[in-house]
Image (cartoon, rainbow, N blue to C red):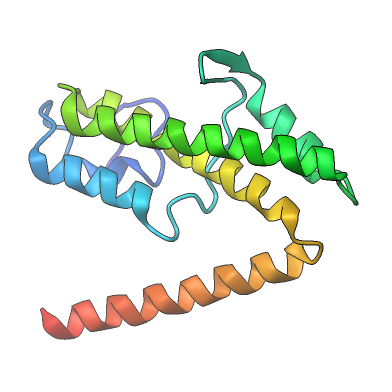
Length: 158
């Protein structure tokens, strides 16, 4: 679909038809994208995020944690607490997508925010594993295989 002059067009913009009304189907597709195994792949971690009522520099905090070669037990504990708060944030964003009257633009923006928070959450959860890079790549490849098999199944059923 053409951009139609909208600013910030990206791979998520094809999820709505931009007729000015967020349909139940579009709302469902947006929530499904958030819950997808691939939803957060390539998502941009928000620079600033309000988590549990506190404004934090999420991108900087996440990169500080994951940039440590050997995070301490205290680092991991703090990262786990932040990850728990981020899980609550994603649930809150999903609830808003379900219940609020939203424009298509607002719904896509909420989806982008949720995907970025999920990306941060995944990065933080990976700190517990000393071989996190190896396992993370394997997990992504496993999910890629699962998604491909699922898509093939859906194509056959149609």
